[in-house]
Image (cartoon, rainbow over all chains, first blue to last red; front, side, top):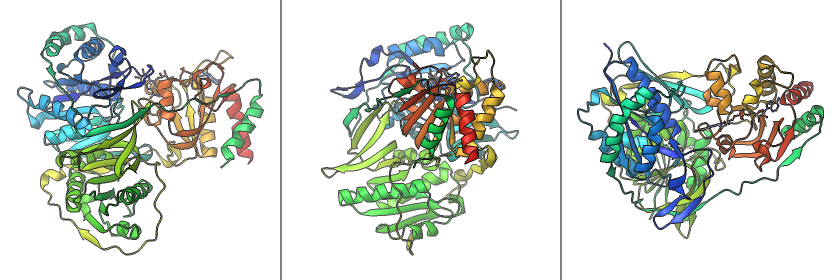
Length: 270
Length: 343
Ligand SMILES: Cc1cc2nc3c(=O)[nH]c(=O)nc-3n(C[C@H](O)[C@H](O)[C@H](O)COP(=O)(O)OP(=O)(O)OC[C@H]3O[C@@H](n4cnc5c(N)ncnc54)[C@H](O)[C@@H]3O)c2cc1C
């Protein structure tokens, strides 16, 4: 009999990657210039986790997906307008910073508390998903701390594939060095998976799913608890943009043969 | 007073890998800079060969958690081992290589010990007697220097950020640190590694050159046709001859994922950029790739950069490449392969 999973996905929002970002100093630490004005998207690897969660739930009737998200309420609402049209889930919103400079340990504490607050949470059916790294902090540290707070010691990071075996065990592929995957089986739940890209394309928008989700999204946003991140004990001595602009030499009107010779010579140089 | 613990896992043969040896150099520098004792903590099936390999590194103690249960890379057992080592060392700073194995586990250990952690660190330094580290935010878009007062402080140092330690081997006396395991630690079983056949392995982290292929390879060319077979042949031919590592843009791997008959050897693991990897190579050559920002953030650690694009106004021209060849990648790479074959 298939398991009715409880799948909780942790995921927040990040600035649209096509935006130019600039750090600014504020009294409470570093931030992005015009941070509240920047268009935002669902954090990409957390997005993959959400789509994988929805796919697993679909294949296992009775399963349910929650999305737990820490972010400024107004921005969360904006991002939910599109995300909620992708796959069915129930939102649990926490009104706090989505900044890359916010301390991951404090964000993890808030996420774990929200997960523990889910009515009827059953650890024997629980899968906690998230992205293996955010596109903001990019540290790959939050999910493990969420797992620890929930007492989950079967944890996987850089996951590209999850398959449920006939006996209910999970078979998991994690990214390791050199373009390879480690294969593991996990005999029992709860388990935590930090997803990399996985195998699913982004689902198309489905207005019907959107309407269903919106019934819970709006109340969840209204209910969202405020979270203040103190960044306790952290000091940013500097935050700077790289001096990256190169003097690009543009070579036009050179024959492919000459270019090839130049490239081969360049490659061969120590 | 700080106590620095260099923490690492062994490779399958019991030795320490390159990333671990690089981290050891950084750990030594931290210890020297802070006037702090350096300890070594090792995890693996058998840690004695690794301890012997770094016997002369100046560590005051060599602590080890060893045994068959600790050979595989697994959260439950690795976290128990790392926790025990950090406690036994009474470490205030734990520095470990950012391998997939350490990345999976150390944040959880920091949580257990009430500490804090920084991942993807690119440098650890001391200034005015205080430790600090550098790391990037927003996918390599800005770099920060971070200091912390909370201890223990766990640091995962990215590979390629420090020279590898290379001192004399010797005989180290390893203090075994006991870790009690229960059945709950063994619910996960590592069953193996899935890898492409060695001749199909296109990701080579140690290669001198990153060769990036973009979606242009699959697009309609000036003759009005697409040439996926030739593209595949040219790319694979070049990789074989130049021993380069293959990177891709998102557009190209997404096409491959959609089952189009293009470049079958491409997977998401090849993708470089915002939602891909940020590899380290001395040189990079981009072909048929526009050089948009979500792609080029993945080039942060590629030193010399050249691109071949039909479009003189592509993004590489905007200060992102050292040289942009405005040319047809098919024609250029055909000739490059010919020249390499003749060598
Ligand atoms: C959330 C998000 C995350 C993203 N993450 C990533 C990421 O991680 N990595 C990534 O790469 N992108 C990423 N992108 C996508 C990125 O914005 C670009 O769309 C993508 O990099 C473009 O790929 P491309 O250059 O291969 O394709 P195109 O933009 O289609 O460019 C093809 C290029 O090929 C050239 N060309 C065609 N034929 C030839 C020829 N014969 N010779 C020479 N040149 C030729 C053309 O002039 C053109 O410049 C992301 C986007 C978003 C929104």
